[in-house]
Image (cartoon, rainbow, N blue to C red; front, side, top):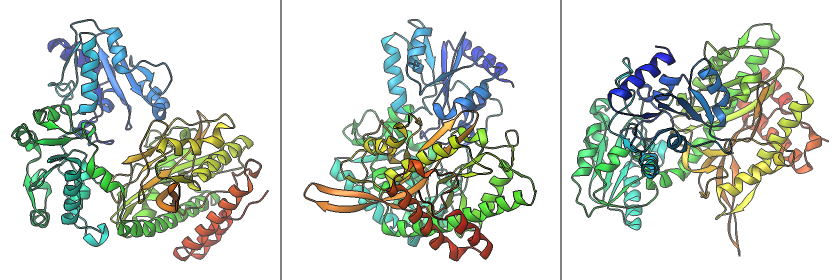
Length: 593
């Protein structure tokens, strides 16, 4: 079906069901950032891939709202269709609900799937629409009838993770979680975010390609713990382990009925952001606790076993990237063809050689020239281009391992860089150095740290519209809360958190520049003014110096860069062959004024 045919089918469905507008995101029951193919409804309807975007359709109009990371990809996907792009990151752009209020009239009905939309979004939409006397039908899924070849729910097997890799047993984690629940006055807690169950029960899933979390829930009280999952995903060993740890196993679809059976006085925590609207209603008769995702807070602070394993895997990951760079430059110098897609496959091959490798932590971003300006570009057979000895190449990639998760971005020159490219690159590097070198009080917000990173770029009237960094899971999701560096968050950093720092500059149609390192929050000092933190660098991958213009750097930035690249050579050389070490030493040569 073409986009036009899909829209026609959707509008026929709307007319049949007395619906005046439909809201269609990519959304699954847990509000996961990435979803199994069954829940890629917006992608199926509009053609836009990626983690952000929502299509809204009325009888006469259709629009797609997405953020600045996907503007160019959305324009390409929507070309030739009637769907209008709404640039949601830009000032003054109507929100979805404001637009619907302007397009609809009192008495009209908006439909979206309450089984897939989070309670946080659904309750906001319903209340805002109600002001305009517009109602919401949350019992229908607008695309289910018309998506005739819709994929089935996934049924991937579940893998256990050994305690020597996690640093804490399931029983110990359950005890810590219950202690925190008691402290917060919570009697029953529904773990809605899928990776919370992964962390608690020490397992990884295979429901989604390149993502370690399966579709499941866990319900915890002071004397009971229930793990909701399709039993066919469990081995006998997993069943025995979970049962021995005190968990009862029930079907994935049984959560709502268990919630409905809870006493009305039960002090229940369901996090609206990670609980779908219809499931939230099943427990809404209880005394609902307004509290954070407790498991996410516990999971976000890594123990020393997790950190020691992460340190080791980051060095191995850095060596794999050097092998890849050496291969690519050698291929090009020998006159052999390299494309974005062949480069992506080679980098995967290099990572697959690392012990404990499971899969990439996200689809590698191989952005050559103009493709580098697309923040979440994902190469395929249709978009693939040849890489030549010209321009610059942005590579954002990572691995998911039994003993950690990596996420690294580097930009390398394929020919002689322009002055504009060197200026942009140096300012991005300076931003990275500013934050990675910062010391800050424990009550500093992530928004304040975000501003520290951006300042060198702002001084030269440049900016980027994505966040400065995010939390990283331990063998779990590469994007993990609760922390993230952005101007909108009031979250704080805690000792033991694992994060990225990734400033960038993007010139549409020309190139993109982003440099990303992973960092670990550690204590810097105890002072009369309180505790101070700093960042331990975890990424050891060469930062290219051919793109650096030291005229834009202070002595402290040059010193940091030279010291960093010297550490890269020291730590990676034992894992590389003679030719690779020779290339690495040249790549990491010192720079000066």
